[in-house]
Image (tube, rainbow, N blue to C red; front, side):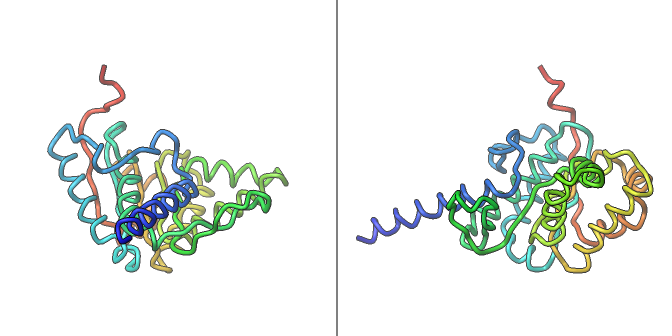
Length: 229
């Protein structure tokens, strides 16, 4: 009887993990990213993996404390992989603490799970959506929903910060988002290909200062794996 109950509990946890994970906006390319299948190719990547493993092992405490990670390095070294994999490790080890909001489609009948909500968002895509929503009634509601989740979710991955074309409007939008997460002590992961100086030029020194206070730095060096044959 005990073994059967454990099997049911394990099955329910797996179903919940699949449902919750599918609501986070994980890019298909990173759907299977895990800390176990990240393969370091240099010592710096190995140290980055160790930092992620340590962060994930205290994941709930880090979320409660509003602590985050700042992944910095050149193209193709696995920054996005590590950020998503770290989140997945935290969720998988504490699935009962993570949730999924109600579907917007009332006919779907999907289960709703209470708990921490999380999001994985490309900064470039977010800014494009906000910009396009100014002239499109159809996009205003989706833009508001995404921005609301970026502001309020317990943990948000903001991917590819600094890839957007720098303008005063871009700097203002990014600072406003970072600042509200900073003030509300919400855990945030950032990834960037920029050096610190480049990032300051892209998004402004105020935003960079906030990021440095919110996050532990994770340097991810090495060669671009996409160029390897």
